Amino acid sequence: MTSALSLTPRPDLHALVARWSDDGSTAQLQQDYVHILAVAQEHHLAKWLLDVRRRDQLNPELGRWTTHEFYPRAASSLEPQQLRIAVLCSPVRLAVYEADPSQQQYLAYGLEPGRNYDLRLFIEEGVAMEWLLGSA
Image (cartoon, rainbow, N blue to C red; front, side):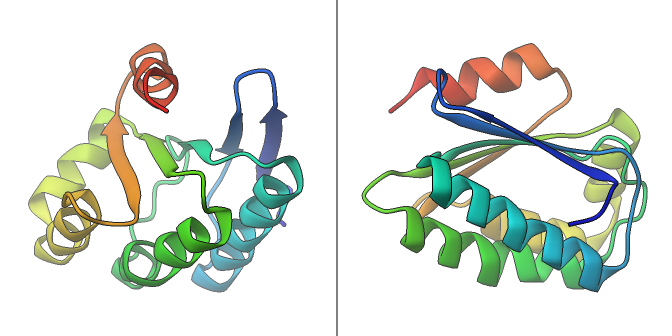
């Protein structure tokens, strides 16, 4: 785990809050995600708020890895709970997602119904938490 990642388990909300204060290499961010899963398993938390507003690098390799490999694996390991992931983004980051064909492809894949996880992007934390906690 990097010092840029802070994790706050919220058993009272059945949620885990992960915030990055800075960016990192793809390998480091992958380690961060693995650490998030370990903490989620330890506390039995399948509702995640991932605050990526301060991560300004958008790496298509990481986008593919999270949506195609990590999130499905994490969801399987947290069953029977349904993994719900609210990603808190900056407006600038959302604009980049919308402008980059690779990012669009990975995001569309992750947002498709029928995945073994639920993923949504948000700009406002309150709205993100409402979605995250609003369904079982």
